[in-house]
Amino acid sequence: MLEKPGAAELLANARDVLLQELLPNLPEPMRFQARMIANAMGIAERELGASQAKAGSARAALEVAMGPGPDGGDGRLRELAKEIRTGQQDPGTVDHAVTARLLREYTRFRCSVSAPRSLLGRG
Image (tube, rainbow, N blue to C red):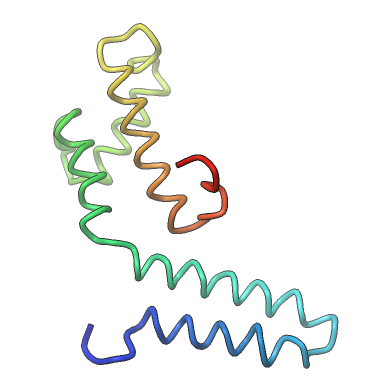
């Protein structure tokens, strides 16, 4: 962060103003758009606030278990998707349990940024 408030704090403050002060004064037809903007701001805020170490650890765990991809983590995810589509990671295959665990971890991380309410009660 270069100075305070940081980007996540600025987004949180702007989102609060939008929801608490502006939204109640908008005409009904514009309220849906304002809520969409607030939702996008919330996602951006969580993404900025998400630990880079956590994102890195999910990718690192994938690479440790599956080996690095030709062009980094995203390439490995594309490779893994191809392996899943072709049945190379199906139940009963050697790496299935590890792959399933890693994908659950990666999905939880992604949901913690884009849809945290989807994780309520799921640990």
